[in-house]
Amino acid sequence: MRMEVDYLLEQIEFHNSSYEWIVRQSEKIARAMKALDEKEFNAEAYDKLAKKFFELELRYKRNKKDYDAVVTQVRTYFNDKHGMDIMGLLDDDINEAK
Image 1 (cartoon, one colour):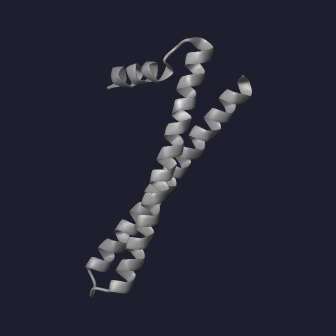
Image 2: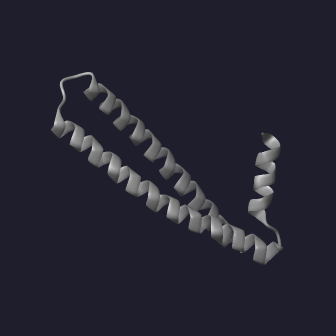
């Protein structure tokens, strides 16, 4: 039981770090595109950046799919083992914090 929870937490941390990396890379690409706008148009450089951004978008979608699967596992685990809607409790905490 403990190992399953540890595994789920590790997966959540992994996906969170992946999201952070994707955001950082997206920011770099956006800055590079902005710099290109300030210079003479370079189609080749712009295409390279667009391709990188597309690849990041695909990584994001894959990461989201995997992350959603982990969230489903967390929800199922807490519901089966403890009879509680852990995601509902977290949503309530988030709403109270607002």
